[in-house]
Length: 101
Image (cartoon, rainbow, N blue to C red; front, side, top):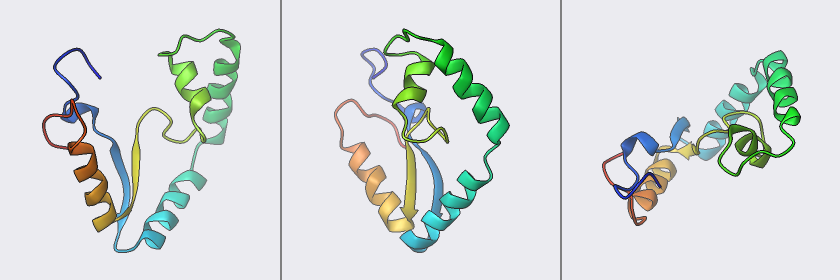
């Protein structure tokens, strides 16, 4: 959470793949991942490995926590239109969230 003002629209997760069905959305997300620049990711992960004591809020720590190096720095919503809308509704109910996503 940023300061006492809470989380605003700028902090919202990124919606990267919405389709009519969950299966279509996942297929689209898989295509995004398959198109990743592997040389750039190799360089990035090599730099992360050089930081042997990253702080909890550092980019290196964020990358190390991520299950995948694709879109590691933000929440990602993938699913059918209805499912993503439900996820946004759920986020809107969280304490400290303000504005609209």
